[in-house]
Length: 235
Ligand code: BTN
Image 1 (cartoon, rainbow, N blue to C red):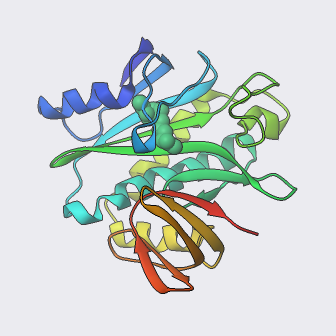
Image 2 (image 1 turned 120 degrees about the vertical axis):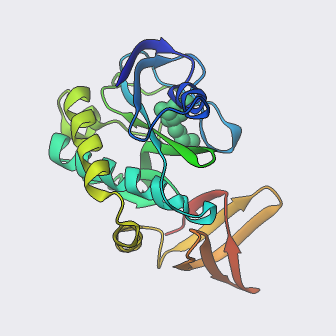
């Protein structure tokens, strides 16, 4: 395992390692990232020492269109790790967020997963908000949460890391089981959703997941399959 006090991005580091032939199972973890990467080209920000920032290099025997299952395996392992280490059971929101019901009208994001591909390798990185200050930065207030806020105590990043990696190990390479578990635990299925895509918005009910991990939304204009975008669970 490669541990960093500070690095630009654990995903970037492992992608370079993957291109140089590093084997499956190499892990990079950092206390702080100066250029953390999020989905859809966004930046992933976290105060130093506040989060579990970890990436795993996988070389799954999967066709490219099923690599989303590697993301699912990490997301599901992270849900279990949060439950056993902090007593918090997040839901998986399609495609790759861990969210927690805020007890009011909505959900708050606890973690995000980002997969980046250097075929045949895939680097799956996750950022879990673990021990954050009581006040979240204004851009995250009301939208995000952290394990210490939910558990009422500080949570061990090291314990969480161990459980996360054990959970990933335990799931590979039974991809069929990963697909079934993801389907069972995906909070998006069956819900009214609004999907924000680059070209507009799709409203409807999330009715299915395709084999390549896309979301099927049943709306006014019929069924649409969406492959990326931000989902809002509409109540
Ligand atoms: C998202 O946008 O929700 C995905 C965020 C993924 C962040 C993690 S932190 C560890 C790894 N390294 C990165 O640069 N990004 C991922």
